[in-house]
Amino acid sequence: MPDALTVIRHADRPSVTLPGGAAYQPIIGDDTGDGLPIRTGIQTSQPGYATPPHSHPYAEILTVIEGRGEAWLDGEEGVVMMEPGVTIAVPANRVHAFRVVGDRPLVTLGVHTNGKRIVNYVSPPQSPG
Image (cartoon, rainbow, N blue to C red):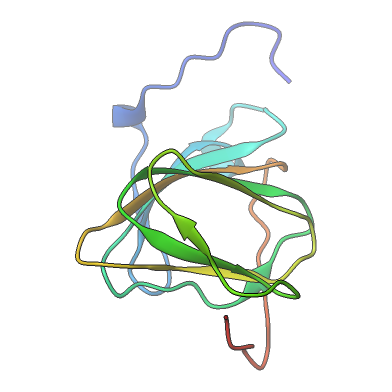
């Protein structure tokens, strides 16, 4: 971990396209070279977007900046509404998914409690909700 203040300018971080079409702008972690033990990024998901059920071997935290969505966690009843002012914390190794609700993009700030994004997709996919 760096021993000096790390300043990240979002305009300097390019976006990538995730499977399914969501735009993801990595801020800290993976190949950004910051040496920090977390990964953060801003994801913009268009109407109709849904993640396939998956898990991570670490906790994931999502804060909604704009739009609306639904989050699903395996083993829990129903879904949780995602909207501005809502943060969800997904436990490590728990299968989860989310989808956009409505006609506006869902913008989230994601924090992975690991410096590298690791995704374990469920095969065959489970049905959220």
